[in-house]
Amino acid sequence: MSVLLGYDESPGAKAALTIAIDVASRYGEQLVIVYGTEPPGGVGEERRTHEAMLQQWGREAVGHALDAAAAAGVDAVTELVSARPVDALLEQAERHDARLIVVGTWGESPIRGAILGSTPHKLLHLSRRPVLCVPLPT
Image 1 (cartoon, rainbow, N blue to C red):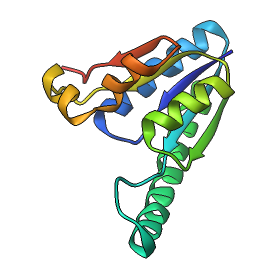
Image 2 (image 1 turned 90 degrees about the horizontal axis):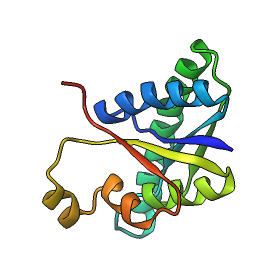
Image 3 (image 1 turned 180 degrees about the horizontal axis):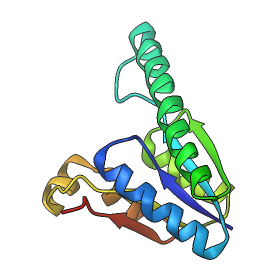
Image 4 (image 1 turned 180 degrees about the vertical axis):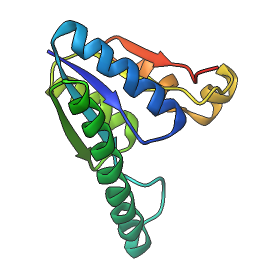
């Protein structure tokens, strides 16, 4: 089993990283750091350029998270997936037999999340695995 983390270097993701490292350490599990690189909408060359940029940002983001896990003594791997974040997390949760999925929140209202389709909101409704939503620190 593993602990799966959706990570994009947002403030919510940074809070989730701390919790995911702690949970992985306590359970002696591998931490799987996931970043979905599929851009929203668009087709053609613009889409490919956008995805290439997301891949570059994703490599940097998961690299920073990987360094934090290593500093804490937690075994970790990274997965850059050519899919939207929710789909990437659900796919990798199955692939890595995740004990749980950890994601940060943006502090949005439940109604806003439902209307705009936030990643945590979608995961809570679509995941067959437990989802831990980490709020922003106060």
